[in-house]
Length: 479
Image 1 (cartoon, rainbow, N blue to C red):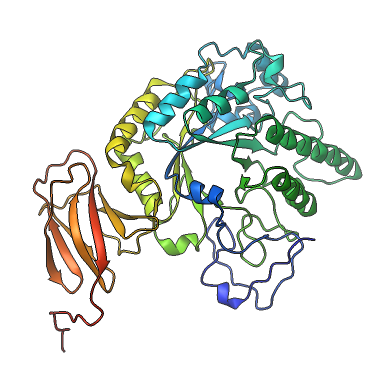
Image 2 (image 1 turned 90 degrees about the vertical axis):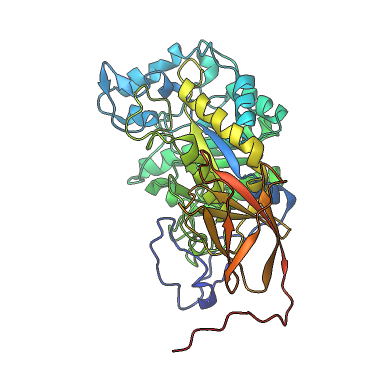
């Protein structure tokens, strides 16, 4: 029997009702839900604790859409490359025939995994099936799979095995929306639509159970294409399917995108409680303060150019630098989240050189500074303009991840009440000690020996508790 979730007014300041951050008032009276959240608060099991400490991850968008690469008959598609099948400029049947051209001779899952490991990624999310419906594994429930392509081999298996061998956990991306399936409906308007969608639901359930059965090393499912009215109205079915999948795979990690409650609320149920194990509302955006995540686990998925997931021949607009991406990583960790960087391999399976160069630069920095990213989270310190604080989980060790050095070379920090700095030193050179200068009660300057740092760096703070009866030497201002 499904657990009924009850949330009262006391949760109003802690929980968000929608991932778009539009604040809505909490219900004045409790709402009894049959298909709302199954749990309040974070999961505390070892599998989720590990996820929480990943820090940095990789996303890979790859499929048939990588062959045209955002271009068709010399015309550029202005949307995200993986959506090109939805473009009026290409007939669906013509796009679907790309299956006969899919022969990625440059695909090397081992090379991908080694690059991800060098970058410092602790998990990868891989697209098993995007909205076009093409399956990157030989599903027995569809003919539109890699098995029918010239390549024929199981790509999902190759990716799962290669990344697992490198110690990188795998999450399987799955689009519920399937443009190629005859029974998919955006909205159920007729009896015929309803009958067709019942067949589609069975198909979806079969493919998900197949993925969990075929790839037992995978740690979770990342859902997409779940916003259409047809799926939003399947609260009971989706809830039962989630329960079945979790029973089949204890410890399975599922984000907040999979299902809606019986009132059509997605991500957060009608009581404002997160549905799923972590919030997936932070796509190409990052919160600015801890209150915005409402005590939930979360991650941010990010592209290098703006909104380009699948391979696009033309990278338009601003291309993020390694330092920008590292700053996003530090910001996410400082607010208790993970940062996931997207890669879009070419149609032949090779990862473009620009992305490999970024991975190398990020990895070079991570080799020296990963201690401030892995198994770290929110430190509880007041944000300063020079960068971000992270804190090692289960310890009093705090890291200052510095991106912007003031012209004075002095980094200001304000310590929490009754907390003292026991020691401060550079992470890259632990012999380089920094003596804090107290400038006010619980406020300090850390004066750097050099001001011309070319890359972000980390200062380690070993902290402790001040004596309970210690009084400040600074008298409060009197007016």
